[in-house]
Length: 226
Ligand code: ATP
Ligand code: ZN
Image (cartoon, rainbow, N blue to C red; front, top):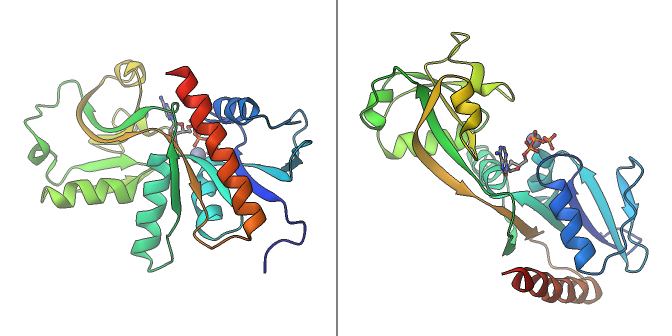
């Protein structure tokens, strides 16, 4: 059932806000990574581990389906995928291993500067642009606010100015992007960090022992920085 090679498979973001720190953490854990070339899969030289480099959005599904054993992922993307799968009646299990010390951001609601915002009710029947339709639905359904969504994978912050939406639900770290687009943050929906997750399926003892060893090192590396 498992891959013939017997090597542990770890998925990390290929290029983006999580890739440098995911790689740096693995290196500090003693993995000799050779990620210069652009290959999807690369071997760790000194341990039976393969690194798979993919779009971050693909990582939760790869872990939940057991295609890879471990994944480094933002909690925002992980939770969105979990809700998406639940809504479709698909399997969405994973083992949380450790919250990491990078990738901090928040998923927030933002409206144009001149929007008179007096709480979530102000968004009643508004059209809201987002890449996180499931997290948005859960948040506003809990508050009993009816709304319409507009799914955008990118350029969410320009949607109000372009007349595509009345408000947005997007990731924020400093708020500079919002300000540059004439938007103000009005509600924090979800605070996110990068996290390390494991596939739900039981592993053979060798690979599980390797994960356990790796986690001791991850804890050590993160504690050393605190
Ligand atoms: P990919 O090409 O892999 O799909 P992406 O464009 O979806 O990349 P990035 O912008 O690299 O993703 O962000 C990856 C993750 O980094 C986010 O999902 C989030 O968890 C985290 N992150 C941290 N700070 C920010 C920020 N200021 N804006 C967006 N994401 C952030
Ligand atoms: Zn992505």
